[in-house]
Image (cartoon, rainbow, N blue to C red; front, side, top):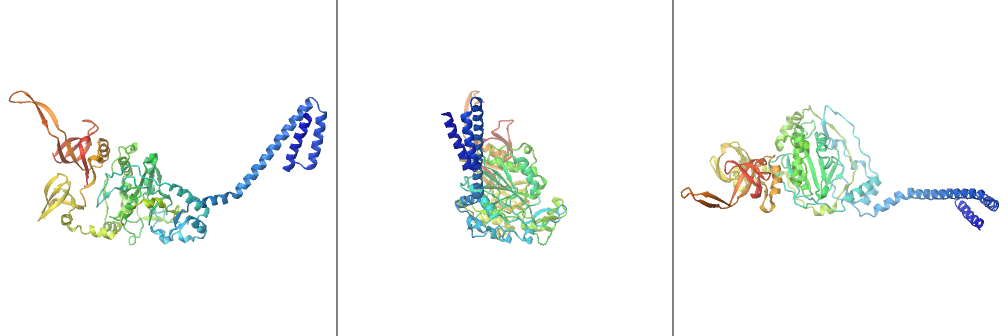
Length: 592
């Protein structure tokens, strides 16, 4: 019985050999006859040895068989992998992209094509369609010191393969599957009105504003101080933010490249920062041809497009970055803290010197500075050089249509309109009276903001929002006069306030030396006193009193009444007073 089982088993094993081409037919017959003979004659230990040999042979055959199967499957995957990948991508929803025209301007082609057709035609794209000419590079190059770099060749990027373009598009499109929204209340205590002082902050247009995600790619246009400041940004914010200097944001008609981007999506807070370094004119040596930049109103439309897509824009003057980069980082930290109280100011910035404000320049002033080499002087360089190199240009322009459907853009403002308004400032007081606006000025070394109502000879009369009363001013003593559309930059009513909200705001107001106008309630109070005539104790009671007060020189009163109190100069009482957060029912930051 055992011999029969052995014989059947060996026949099966031998058949496996033949099916897999490992033994020839003659070897099979010889192997069967010899084994049967051994099986009949062997006894005792010989049978045990025979079984061991059979088991080893059987295991060896199984291993060979498995290796063959694995090899066949591997060859099949290698042969069909690329085709299978392409077929999978083609099943994705077509993505519309825009092909840039042969220039580095912000305007995009209005005609868009499907990603699938773009992939098919990608090999046919002429290099000139995405690589600007050398002349165009000249005006969009990285600024650098002429003493460091004098000349470099233009290294044009190679055209992307269709497969690479497809994979990038597929990866980027995955971000756009579900729109994201800001998770904070964009209260901007840094709001200013024209004329602006650097640094200034533009917040998202509303709570729950949809976010436009950036995409990878940059044309290489870098300012002189960008790389230096990037190191400071990484030093202080790398633990809490993703930091990039090679991203762009695509709007309906424009493509913008933030100087530096900071992104935090933790816990749905979704803080997206666009950090800009503004220079008064281009960093090229040809004085006759270099243009003024970032003058008043020049960036208003760009700022609006970012704020309507969930971004916070923070703009510094280049001279501030050059002279006090740590202070600029502290300002960024203050902005983050104002909307995200859980954020901890980096230890290295706690005692950092604050940056001094810089008045935004006019176009005329920028031209004068250019003629005087003003930038070169404060940067400490003889002249600018340039590196005409395009970096990171292998990218597809992918529009996130779902986000753009939710975006409500402001009406574009023509620069000529803004300039025409600003040139009417020859008689600011008269304009303010006729248009029901406000004026801010220095008066006997004190800042004030007034709504003028009368203008007679050498004096004006109007309501002063610092003293909160009608006042008269001698025009000869008024300095640095500016027109304002309103007297405050931020107003919070009682329903928006609370002890914690006021405390968070004071942490930003105090270091930035803001003037606060508030409605303050002095509560009703009962007390016992002695009647001087009868020497009897009598109970007295005062009524609750609500008044409007403007305060400045504000400090936390942690060593006195406690952390929910401030000590400040009261312009109503003209003396230092203590105020409790819980009694503030209206809070305005004056636009001074």
